[in-house]
Image 1 (spheres, rainbow, N blue to C red):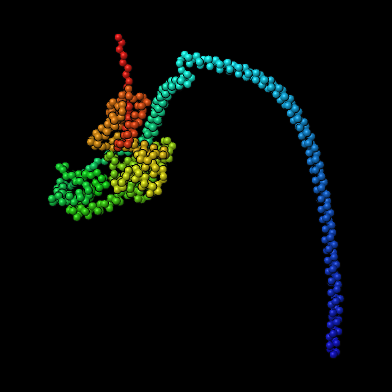
Image 2: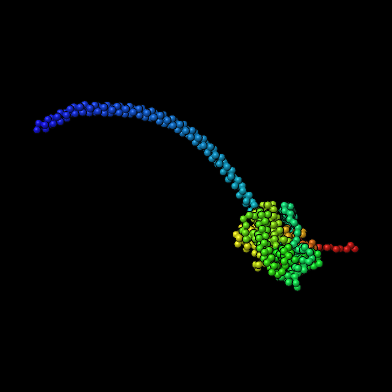
Length: 513
């Protein structure tokens, strides 16, 4: 019990001690907080004073600016008032001037009215005089007004037709001279930029033999070797008295080339019999197939046209073994491509389109013996299948005018084709075909009404047509030459172009007595 009491007394004393120690500390903290609050309040008062001073300064500045603006506005208002007064003065002056001009205009208008009245009176007098003159003319000529008008128109029409015909002839001659001069210049420039060999393919190929003894081995017993060779290759073998030489004849260059290589390999091998001939022929055909592709790639590289389809390149290579009037078609195609490109560059057309179309214009000839139809249209269809440009397909299809010509490149390809095929030595035809063509040229011209004589000259490149001067006029001559030229284009197949020259001669004869 005493212990508990002692514990309680000790605890009370400890609490009193702690109370007396803690209370001074709390008083100090409260004093410190109060001091800080007073400092903050003082700072706030100072800031408020500063802000108030700053606001007063700004208000003074604003008031000063406002007073300046008001003064400027007052000056501007004075200047505007002064300007308005000047404008008003000018307007008043103009109004006075307008009033004066209006008065002058009224006077002139009155004068014009008076003159109009005088003119009306004169017009009436003239109408009366005109009626009297018309009556006198009708009495003198015996024609009424409508009849006289028709007669006058008829005479004017006759005079006008004569003048128009003369003008047409003059302008046509002038246009022909200018176009001919320009065309000659363009063609000359194009030809000078490209010079190709002047060669013509023949229908025979010679094969050199090591000795005449080899001819007997080629013929074989009872001709079995030569018969088998001709049957397998489709080519004729001509054995004559020419020493150490035999001839291979055929129109198909590819077959003739295959036959030549086959025969040379057989002669080199020495074993010649039907089975060996067939075996060697198959080997050569495989080699020639690769050669065709190589020739196509070489031609494409030479003309400078990349990215062509491989199958199209093979068709190009096949043109090396195709001729037209003795002219090699692949060489002709290269030449046309270069010429078309040069012409396009001279006249400002699309050079690339012209070159590609010129190079591929005869691509249809590589398969025209397999597909029925015109080689130009076949070529157009082939190029369309290979996805070529529409303008290229159009130019290829139109280079013989089998379809209407649309673009300038169509005309360029047609001109380049004519230049390449018509130059001297490029093509040839046999004598029988030549004579027949010459006769057809003369007969077509003679069949026209009013034609007296016709002569084909310059190897069929020009036709002179003589007409009856009483039946054919100068204007009809022009139409006749066009009709004959169009009939040649429709009915004849010829290299280059034909000049139709119609001649009309009028003679006046009188005797002095």
